Length: 264
Image 1 (tube, one colour):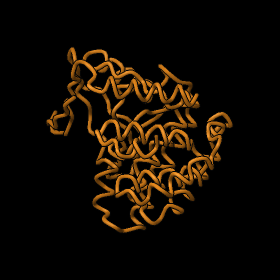
Image 2 (cartoon, one colour; image 1 turned 180 degrees about the horizontal axis):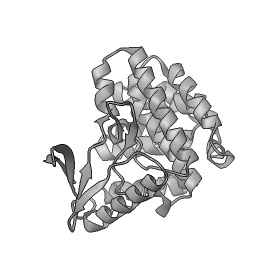
Image 3 (cartoon, one colour; image 1 turned 45 degrees about the vertical axis):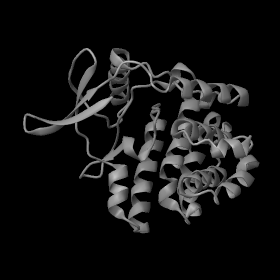
């Protein structure tokens, strides 16, 4: 998949091309097997069809989300395997990098996005890859969401998909809370308490991975970030077992199997 910035009628837009095939088919199959083995349907990876089918999924999901009042790009045009999308602001990832180590600025961004996710969930929305690079904030402070070429509801329920959003958000932002895990958990906890009971129910067996998280903090920066997300998940009552499966997914995808060898 490729994304190119272009100017349309004097405004920035994005031409998104969807590549055919799925280069991560083996990785996703492994994650699916792990999720099935753990009996956690919320972790089953959605299919990644690629090409025109991925384009159709994203176009449909953008319409659905906009109808719910969620801030997403507008489709300005399309081809067989391309979409021309409106620009909706700078990514959260870029804004977090620009904040440097300013804890107050990072916390302000995080609170803003947590509120937007919670509001979207209350409207019946769900996302998919809820990480900082897929979240936007425009100059007026409005939070938006991008990248919807997969549909989690193909393999899970709405409450499971919403729980997955929180998990991936915690994982994606954990590296900005190195040494401040409690601060992130404190911000996530009220939002999670406001979710429906079925979303909260996915939190079961919260304490199961705390020992693993503590051991992982000594394995280097990437492992420490994952460990922090586990601790945040525990403190905020998310999906602790989901983090384990995501750890496996991450290491398979990176081709670094040392952690897997340690775990198994």
